[in-house]
Length: 89
Image (cartoon, rainbow, N blue to C red):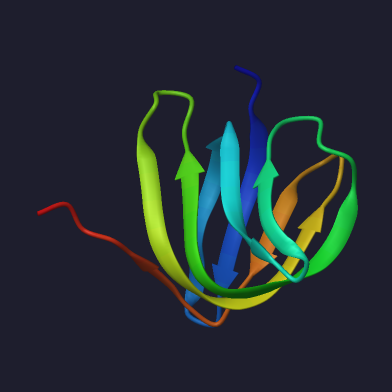
């Protein structure tokens, strides 16, 4: 799968900064799925769950505090007050 540059930034610093193949979260108008070569846009994000899938197939699931998502040709940036990773039990 094609990958894209993703930065998830919180007030404490970057919660994620690397290559991803998939990002899902709850946008202002509903659920969003971002993949490589997605059309550029900006939207607000609601509080809720998000998921990042890496090229290796590893999934990073987290609870997020809403925020702002910017998708461009160079990278995707998600600014959020918090990004609390779920732990496997």
